[in-house]
Image 1 (cartoon, rainbow, N blue to C red):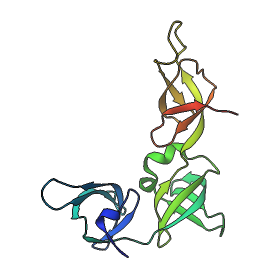
Image 2 (cartoon, rainbow, N blue to C red; image 1 turned 90 degrees about the horizontal axis):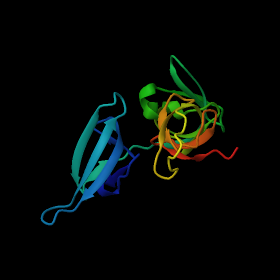
Image 3 (cartoon, one colour; image 1 turned 90 degrees about the vertical axis):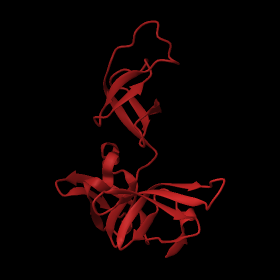
Image 4 (tube, helix red, strand yellow; image 1 turned 180 degrees about the horizontal axis):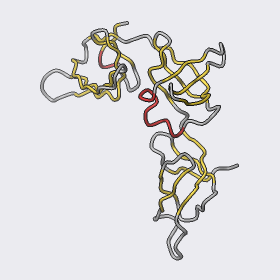
Length: 188
């Protein structure tokens, strides 16, 4: 399906010379003089190579047909990350480079949005937040104000993040999955 370059957004999949690329970011540039262009930073799905392309905003680009469906994360082994479609119970396996930085936040039974092309997983979209337990952090220092200072903490998934001084080991907290930053103390 052909679309104009200026309509592409982050997460779209395009077909260039028979290879699939996922758009990492798209920026429309309107110089004072000259033709407006769309700058696309993309990653080739087959091998992870990143490229940058520039198109005139009215140029046509081939957009790949991608199937976005919720899938349930089952487990991880030497073959990759295994997911199940809750409607058809079909299982698919995603490679580590498709999962990328999202791997530490995957939890058993978590529902994620999995993008597939010809039944091959090409991209994953996690829920916005994840609830994790703080396993190690420094004791708080008396006199620190809660609003301005944060201290490092190790989470149950092995990721380091910064938390407020009143958070102690064993506390469950909510973090943003896009960068692992502290959002709030868990309500449970």
